[in-house]
Length: 355
Image 1: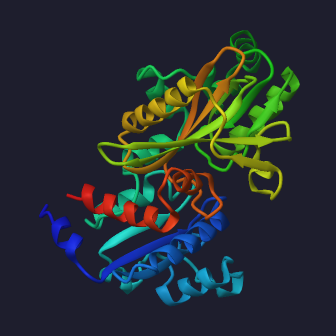
Image 2: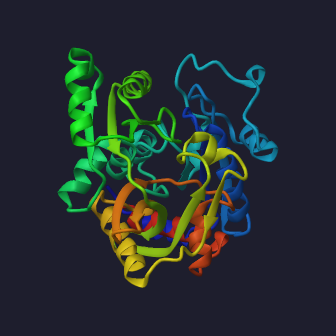
């Protein structure tokens, strides 16, 4: 392939395709993130922004209608949607020099859209196919982290067929390996959807039935008493780690309702951690990013068990929430990179990695 990145680095205007919406449960969050990013990019006269809204059924819409969605901040009404009889891309796609996919969750953050953009032979912001797919699948992620020597909570992975063959044996194995409380999660789903905290066998079996209705592959994790801290990563081959943030909440655990209901959770930046713990979190965040072949950005989440001084990696998010109030941009703002500059840096990193 011919390297056109040098030409694009000097090109003005640079046509930026902003992809948002999508088919996951985080559709509305994506619109909010895209609105914030569009506002930031519009402040740089070099960028010519072309928004592309993806309906919940996967249909791509033209820039004119997509701009209306950004202006309103709301998804299309059913009467305004096109029927996705066949997959097609708006003709304006041909003008795009660089893509900025602002998609969270399955069919957006999991490598599927990244594969499509890769086939277009255009640079795009954020992680590639490998990091995106690994970051979305908890079983694959944990296996890769374990191989890299990154400490994690104990867990059991199984699929729906295995569970259906012998529920009693699996229940006994989970109890012996993890004990209660433990968390049951679909392997491949975002936004804390389908996650349950369980304290006995009946709850365990009900939670597994629920989780396998979302994904045939699930994971059960040991419950730990810990603080939940997060670190933002920015870069390609030489990534940087931000200051550390912490999430506090009064609910039983950080579920979907807590995550997306105003006032149910607080972000603390910076987290008050011992210096050696903060350094360990930053070092592990960069290692996790490099382990999955990350590029552009990620937010890495950890458990800090204060009683023992232990840091355990929880997961990596390859396109975290990107509103002006989200943890990722707030961490970089505290670390010296304001929102508008952060968006510019992500575009530069996309051009840098494109070959």
